[in-house]
Image 1 (cartoon, rainbow, N blue to C red):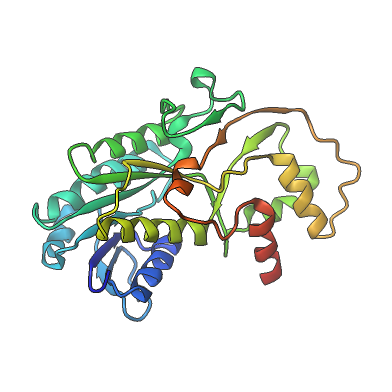
Image 2 (cartoon, rainbow, N blue to C red):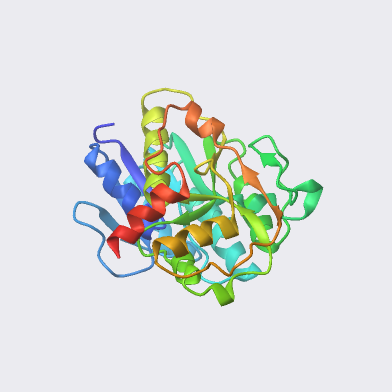
Length: 283
């Protein structure tokens, strides 16, 4: 992987973590983002906006071998999702030279599977072969962006709920049992460090000539009812939930990571207990 050129479009928490892993493996990494805040030492910063094609003219000079598109919408609206996922990916691909780009990794979401369609809220196991039937604009736009990879050497990475450093929404909720949801759905998650490390492992596979699939579910493969997770977290945080009666499990989806593990990747945090124990220890 030495001196392979990687462009990460969307250098937030996940993108920066991935970039640092790739630099440690000898890659030349450029990170594109709108923010003027400097990127970590060694990472070439590109200030640009994927929603404004005129700002992307300098990308061709980077001549990346690999593009990782990890942009996040800036609002939970259809317009923002279209601008940042669909149009943004299209703009970045158009700004790069046709020759030289060996693979595109698009960071998508399991949101493309929706919740209500074709029995997908029954708690049945789903894998990459399950039909993607979005239930909202977010899933629809992500699936539309994935379709832009058609005809390219590309991979859609469908991440389940990402958690880790700085992502403590569930920890905060565990402290407030009175605010727990009425439904007890199946939930899925992936630690940020595993998400970044798995993407880095796929890039390594591609650069080494090993096969890479066109889609992966990126999840720890250990779904759990939401109340199970919340009650375990509450116990670790010394919150009394002895009077809380979990509702019956209804809805949600259980996601398989068999294809992910078939690459040889081994999870650092194989379930929520391992991942959140590490986060609680940091508090």
